[in-house]
Structures are given as C-alpha cells and as structure tokens.
Image (tube, rainbow, N blue to C red):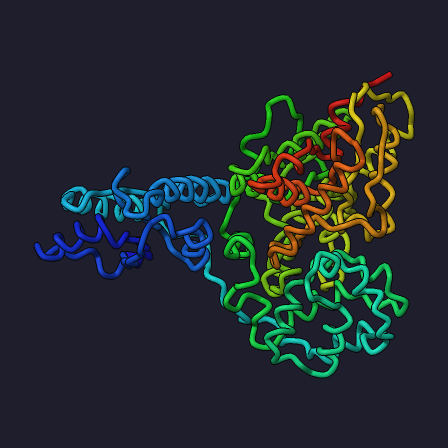
Length: 531
C-alpha cells in the first residue's frame, strides 16, 4: 500500500481534549499516514500555511477546530471556515481538488465524531490517490549560483556616479522610507552580502523602474536587484524564512506547485458561455493568475480581475479572433523570477514553452503586463527561446481599430490612468494605453501629478515588501487620482487594482480614498461598437 502524507492541524482546546480521550481509550491514528500538528487555534492557520503543506507534498490536510460558538478566541472558527473555503477553491483551480482539504469542528466530549472523521478522511484521501505535486528539491540538477561580482559587472554598477537622482525619485524614499538605490549598489559593490540590512533593502525594492529612467549612468537597478535576489548567498532572497514575502508567501507556494509536471490546472472552467474559442487555433490567449487572485482576495472591495480576461476575450471575438485556451494553463513565473526563485521560474518557463510549442501555437496574446514582459522578454533572456510571437492585447486593438469602421459609445465618465510599471518601461507598449484612451468617448481625461515615465507604482511587486511605506504610497496615489476630479481610474494591471483597493479598505481614510476602477480592456469592451 502506498504511503500517504496526511497533515491534521488540531486545535489545542476542544478537539485536542477529544483526541486525548481517544488516546486514553487506546486509539491510534495510522502512524505512517497521519501527522498531527497541535496548534493554538484553527484561525491562526492562514491560507498560506494550509497551502504550504500541499506545496511540500501533502496528499491531504485536515483543519480540526472547536465547534461554532466555543472558540476560546472568539473568531477562530469563523476565520478557519474562510481560510479553508478559499484554499479549497484554489486547490480546485489548480486541479488538485478541494476534497483534499477538509475542515471539521468538535466539542471536547465528541470522541466518536473525531474518530469517525479521522478514519473517513484518511480513506477519502486514499481514494483520491497521491498528490501530483512533487515537493521542490532546491538546486537539484540546476546551475550553480552566479557570483555577485559578475552581476555588478554586467549592469556596470561601478558606473554609479553617486548623484542621488535614483533616491530623489524612488517612490519608497518619497514615502518616508529610509531607502536609497545608490546606497544598496554601493554596499553590494563593497561586498556587504552578509548584511541583514542590505538583504532587507534588496527585498524591499518595488522594481518599478523610475530610478532607471533617471539614472545618468544607465544602471538598470530593477534588473540588477532581480538578479541579486536570485543569487543572494544563503538562499535568503529565494525564500529563506520568507519574512519579506507578502501573504505568508502564498503565491510563491502556488507557483512552485505548478512546476510539477503532473499538475493539471482547471483555470478556465467558469468562462461565460457566449465567449467563443477554438481549440485548434494557432493563436493562444494567455490569461495569467486572475482566478487565483480573485479567490484569495474575495473579501476585498469588488476585486474581480477575471472580468479583465473575459472582456479581453470579448474584444478578440469582436474582431473575429477565436483563440485557443490552455485549460491546464500555468503561471508565467513572473513573481518567482522577481522574488528571487530563478530555479523554479525556469521550470515553469520550460513547461509553458513546451506545452505551447506542442500545441502548435504561433501567436500568444495576453492582457497582463507581467505575463507580456515575461513571455516576450524574460524567457529569452533566461535562455528559453519561445517558438511563438507574443503580443499584448493593446497592440492587437490598435492595429484593428486603425482599420476603421469602429466607434465608441459614450462612457459618461471623466477618467484618469494608473500606469503599469511593466508596460511603462517598455518602449513597444508605453504609449499604447493612452492611445486607446484617446479613442474613447469619455467626459475627459486628466493625468495624475506623477504620470508617464515618472508614474508612481501601486506599492508592491511580485508579492514582496508590503509594509507601511507601500501603504503610504498607495494612499498618495489614490489621493492624486481623486485630485484630478475623475470619476474612474483606468488601470492596465490586475495587481494595481488589488493593491489600490486594499488601501481603500483603510478604516480611517476609506471614504476619502475610494473611487471606481476598471481595467482598460473592460472599458474598451463595454463601449466599442461597429459604425
């Protein structure tokens, strides 16, 4: 019989008392299959901790807590229900199935109920079979780390003139954080790779690229930081204790799980029926991680980034493009690369390129700025040559609208625009969003104070470095948007919506910060028409 791995998080109060009674009666769980983890409260087991068990190869996870109304901490059971539901739905999207995770609650005297649950769940996991997730084995068969000195040379970091233009334009520094790109460069040039302060600063960078725009020596600080993270001594940037990772490193765990070849996500299962696709098309629409974001952040204000994908597909259909969709689509790997996990990024990249190549895909279209940059530029830069062309949705829209016979219904709103850092640093796409907005029939378009090359980041990148200063940056950006007098903030990146909506939930400033947001793809899809 196969050896299964089942983790049971057992609350220290009611359920543990019931379990002790079972042990007193001589009951023993299957020692080779079930690992009991005693915890203070099920509400403390976050979505990141629940999913981490699956990333590490668990075949099943049970969260066993106190019966409703008996939680010693008041809200523990309610939090556990939310965490288990969200994590289960993400397991379903990933193709593992939500039945591998189960939540149960017990009173201290419900020993028979606990016994039955443990036996039933163990048997259910056996029926489901072994997990397709292969635990990450760091460094197996992969290249050795690059010396930091060679990264310094590649980006000509010695060329830093110490002028301070990077620091004076850095959004973090302008938000009050004691942060200086030039100081980080100088510290790394001096060899201070053992410094905890330098490591913390390396992981705090937003990689937004404003400093690179201003640097007279053309030092590409964002890519310099990215490569330093990937090669930092001691593996601290790749993961380490994960203190710098937002949301407990949940999204990094999710992406690493996708590097297992046997994992088969089911990420397009809720697509509206009216959207037309063609499984034989050589044009592929690559959606990205929006469904996972929406599930994880379902409690945030109106987070519905999947709507962006649906509207992007509606636009393709409008112009008679019926693309192929990959049901088992995986993440592009952007966040792994930029948070320092190049090894697993390469695994994802190889799986993606092989899957698309085997399907005969000739053109990949995406509406996500990070997917676009990763598929078009970063795969090739990391030695993986895609056998297909990559286009951003905006490129296709501009080409098609330029042909004429297209008009736009009145939007009835005054708009402003939040630049995507990834699109804003690429010459091919920098001007496209504003060209499209110029075609809309709106009540007017107003730029925010910091816009274009100097646009402010939404405060986070690759799910790392989220702190009070990134929150201050988000508040500043929302105030700039409100100051334009606009009714609608148009975005082009799903993460901008997530991060800025998060800031809108501030209990003290919420009302002064809230404003409607919509992705540019959605705005175009809602107003475009044939003349």
